[in-house]
Amino acid sequence: MTSLVIHCGGGVSDTTISAQPPEPRQLEDPALIAAELEARGIGFERWPARVELAHDATPDTILAAYASEIRHVQATGNYPTVDAIRLTPEHPDREVLRRKFLAEHTHNEDEVRFFVEGRGLFCLHIGEEVLQVLCEQNDFLRVPAGTRHWFDMGGAPRFTAIRFFDNPEGWVAQFTGDGIADHYPLLD
Image (cartoon, rainbow, N blue to C red; front, side, top):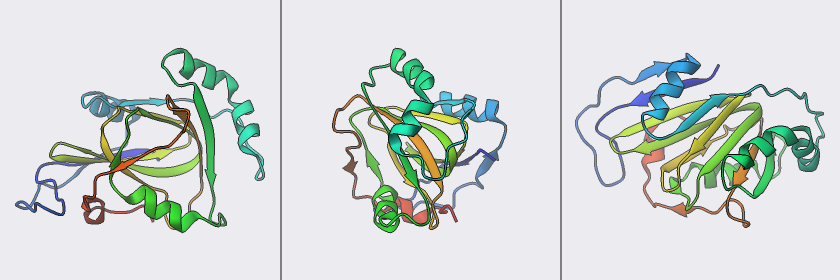
C-alpha cells in the first residue's frame, strides 16, 4: 500500500546530528499523501496501471502499452525523452544500481515517474524533513529539479516505472556526498 512517512526536524546528515527528532508520522490515504507532498512542491497522483505486462516485456513494449499516458505527461511538461526501467531480483546489475540510487543526489531537471508494477521507496530531503514515499503500482510522482533525494528498490527489486526527462541523456545525477540516507529505513 502506498504510504508516506514524514521524519520532521533534526535532519541527520554526515555533518550534523541534532536532538532526538519527533516520532515520524505515517499516512496511507492517497489524498492526504498528495496534499502533504503538494505543500512541499512535490506532485503525486494515482493513475490506473491498466496493462498487465508479460514477464519478458521489453522497454519498447512497456512504452507502447502506456503510449496514451506518455502523451498526456509530455503535453503537460517538457519531457521529450521517455524510457522504461524494469528491475527484478534476477537483474544482473541490481546491487550496483541499488547502491547508486541510494546515494543522496539531485537532478538539474524534474524527476518524473509512473510506477506501472511493483514498488520503490523515494526519500526526499527537504529542509529539516525527510519524506519517505513508498511508491507502488498506480503512483505518479513529480519531484522538482534540485530536490535532494535518494531511491531504494530493495534487496530483491521488483518494479517497473516509466521515466520522463527533459534531458536527452536521461538519468543524470549530481551526488551530494552526504551520507544522510544511511540514517533512514530501507525498503526490505
